Image (cartoon, rainbow, N blue to C red; front, side, top):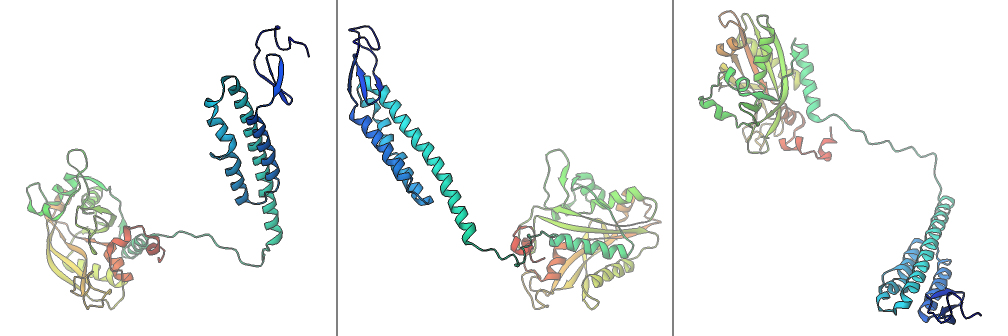
Length: 374
């Protein structure tokens, strides 16, 4: 072999791995032991990989030959401790071994998966006569179902559905309903105030009375106003901070308290049954005069007393009364000519009676075990 291979005679040339030896200073030397061990590890790993036939064995092989404690990875970690003229060659060799093992692992993994899939297809039998599994279908929320039932009953009685916004002004939510700022009755509603002067989340659907009357005055009006209401109240088995409400109003000439009582009793009997017991109790609301509350016998406990009816055997489902003359006037009607009644009912409490539900919190807890029963 010529003396000037790789450079001028007498000059030290870079290390170069060729065949089975190394050239240092123009003379071939034996391969370093660590490189020979890496190549032996590679050959051993490839031979071992050919015998692997399942996922668990593949993971074990990866750990043994490519894990942190494997010889290849330990070689990378020890490069800084090797002689300087060996580091480049050793790093290159370790990297080539690592890449060869990774490529072989990837290819063999695909073969193992294909073999396992083929075995599964051939060994398992599918009974094509079995009926298919129907996908789970959603349904209407129980409150949506009850609300639609309420709408249908009032539609039969000649009422139209009228929608009003959830966010109201203080003017419509209180002032025009005969509840000025200084009125102590405001304490009856724990109000959520929205950012902005005089803006609130409606505490009841009663503001809809003014909207509906102003849109229809001076013609007679007979509508229901459904929607969500919001009050900052303590949550219990019968009280929530958000709840549905349905406002009922009728304005015309010669409408009496008896008309209101007959309408509401007719609604309750259509909703529950013809024999249901109801009672009207005197009450107070600033926007009606006289005012009352309607109770229905508690179906949950059959009148024996429970947490829903507060052990009274009765559950209030609505407040009602003759529309106050000031409210009629604010709505655009002359109270000397027109009269009317209003009622506000709670569909959640109606649902509790219909389905014998003991806790109002179930409706908005989003528990599919509860909702799936409807």
